[in-house]
Amino acid sequence: MAGTRLLKRDAQLIERRIFLKMAGAAWAATLAPGAAFALSRAAAVYASGFMAPDGSYGIATVTEAGEIVERVALPARAHGMAFSTATGKSVAFARRPGTYAMIFDPAGRSEPVVITAVEGRHFFGHGCFSADGRLLYATENDFAANRGMVGIYDGTDGFARIGEFPTYGIGPHDMTLSADGKLLVIANGGIETHPDFGRTKLNLDHMEPSLALVDTKTGALIERHTMPDRWRQLSTRHVDIDAKGRIWFACQYEGARNDLPPLAGSFAPGEDVRFVDLPDETTIALGNYVGAVAVNKAEGLVCLTSPKEGVAVTLDAGTGKVLRQEMIADAAGVAPSPKSFAVSSYDGDFAGRHSDVAWDQHIVRIGVV
Image (cartoon, rainbow, N blue to C red; front, side):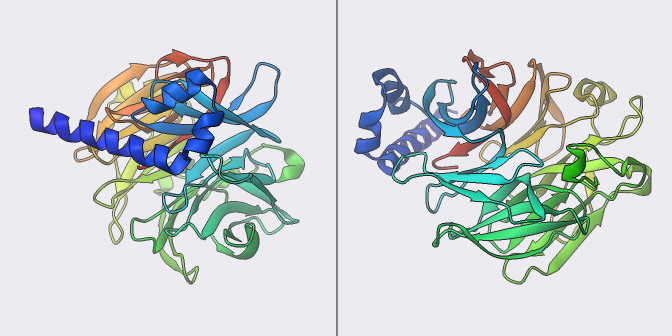
């Protein structure tokens, strides 16, 4: 046990040193003394969208203790975020049906780049970088054709849009990259929307949720998993991948409130989807709605959060067993922490520390993940 604690401590120290090296002394010198001190002793660093008390929006860099290091202004509300370990850059995507994404360097070495969705499209709030960080992939809505698309943006040329391929589903939301960089894992929520109707869900009586694995080089469909007929209103929304390459997904149910649908599951490429058999009391506590999912690869844990009911549920990634169920008001974003998970909330709490912001739906760990 002592050896394990020493290894974890050393890993945290290494992450801190790498992040500070990545950030550079010049950037650290621009921070307020309190922020610079918080960064110097941080074991992990995150980024999250927020709304300030005056109604403006931004991105904050924040430590695992909930201490805000720096803030960057945004043109509108953000939703999902992604980070590239290869380049050190992050991206914040506008909340659906938003049309902007902002790529920024948490270390402040370059100016932010704002891109806009092309005509006839809007972003779905999520995306990811390629393994080398040279490309950015974004889930998009081709709303005239009612089909999901992946927009491809060139990180070596100001993130100009250079291509696209289908998500092989309707209403794509979250998306992540396989460990080898060869596959995009896409959660097609199955819900039809159109910007003329804002965030209204137009096809709840005939939803088509699915999970798709797509080749990053060719855009070809490798696998597609649909939900069982009984659970056609189970919108597949968020995904993450564990240390063994197993894909975890989390859902939001659009059916009857008194149903007890399976809200999470996992599968490996080449396998069928396997739902987690959550206790009824846990499903009820989640309110048939999982707003985010995160994997802690080092600890073999999975966490589900529900802002609707204010709960965070930690699972054993090997067995799916519930290890912890914690009530956290407005629990929203979740990402791995050195000990377990960092959870943010709409009311300004981050890992138990309150700030004068309303954190948005997602957080991302930056630095070494």
